[in-house]
Each structure stands twice: as C-alpha cells, then as structure tokens.
Length: 127
Image 1: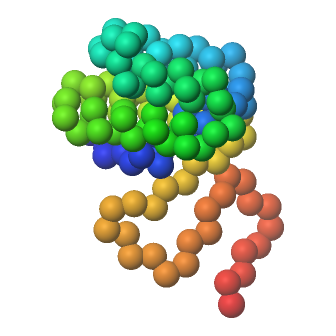
Image 2 (image 1 turned 180 degrees about the vertical axis):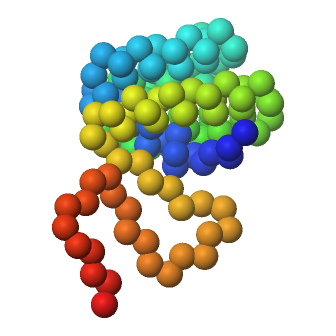
C-alpha cells in the first residue's frame, strides 16, 4: 500500500468539494461520507469535520482538519488505511480528469529543483 500524506488527502478533498470534478466527484465524495459515517458514526469527529469541509469548501483549515483526522485514523486502523488508500487512488483519478493537478514530493526526497504541473506546452529551460 502506497503511503499518503495529509496534504494529498486535503488536495483531493478540495478538488471534490469545490465541484471541479463534476458528477463523478460528487459520487466519489458520497463514497467518503458513507465510509466515515459507517465506520465512525454520524456524531464522530471525522463526520463533523467532513460536514464542516463540505459546508465551507473555500476554507483550507476545514479541509486540512478533515484530512488530518482521516490520516490519523489511517495510522491507527489498518483497515481504514487500506480503504482510504483505494479511495485516494480513485478520487485522484476523478479529480485529475477535470484538469486539476495533484503533485506531491514526500518522504525522504532530496530535491534541488522541482517543477510541478499538469500539462506543459513548449520547452522548459532551467539554465
């Protein structure tokens, strides 16, 4: 299973709740809502964070709070980690289909120069 970061979760959630991913994004978001409420209950901290993020889609703090709770839960619960990893793979595909970019440099990467983006046209010269 590929490790994931709070930032990756937050970026994916942001793309879905902003509406950028269209109907497929709504369906993917509903999948996360169902998982959260089934696993931890409607009155749980993750469910409350999910509602807050959904109600304030332009608030990065709300999105990051949700992402942090999901990441923490995945650290504690291997089954939640496996589900979230599969969901992120699917959700990332849906979110990126809209033209959004999601790039992550993580772990022990030793990066001097990084150019991240979705679609480049023409040359890139770093001299």
